[in-house]
Length: 244
Ligand SMILES: Nc1ncnc2c1ncn2[C@@H]1O[C@H](COP(=O)(O)OP(=O)(O)OP(=O)(O)O)[C@@H](O)[C@H]1O
Image (tube, rainbow, N blue to C red; front, top):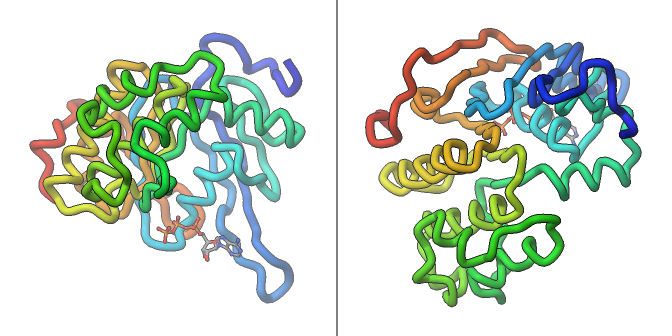
């Protein structure tokens, strides 16, 4: 496969980055969003990226999610160098392997929950039925409802169903509970944990909410474009146990 490296194979981590650097703009106006990030994310883990606003979390997610390219450094997905892929290959990588969940759901307002999920299942390689994906997030009974008829938490669960219906290898979540109250946020985190445990997907959650860290196998602390610390949780908390 193009981009395959000697680090490839079944045992290679979900992601490995080396010296990952991203600079937006040039000269005095340049913004150094990532300043040489070395990170390893094992397959099947739940990882939380924490850090202040502007520290580079979304930039990292966008690069390893195949939505953006670094200025320097490498990012490997299961041993394949994303930075060496053509745009067409990156598009295939996103289509076949990656699910995205964003803070503001991004559902199509004129489509029902079922139809929103179907948008993805129609083009995926080995998708679930939309009903199966909606059942996974506890929304089977609301399949024919439009987004405006659903609460924020329910809309986010539809967005998660849409992202997981293609059975992604990795699920990227950028502030998935940012627009939700604590009870609803906990329910959404519970769904993400279930996706990690039942589908075996590697789940990466970017958040400001430090309490979310208790759910993770690994917590990566970001500051000013760099990794400040990586913690491994010996025991993972359940969403019901975390203080908000
Ligand atoms: N397209 C862009 N052009 C210029 N600067 C950008 C662009 N995207 C991000 N930045 C800058 O890069 C830095 C890192 O941004 P990034 O969105 O990765 O941070 P973040 O940690 O995800 O922040 P937040 O928690 O607020 O979402 C910030 O200073 C931001 O202003």
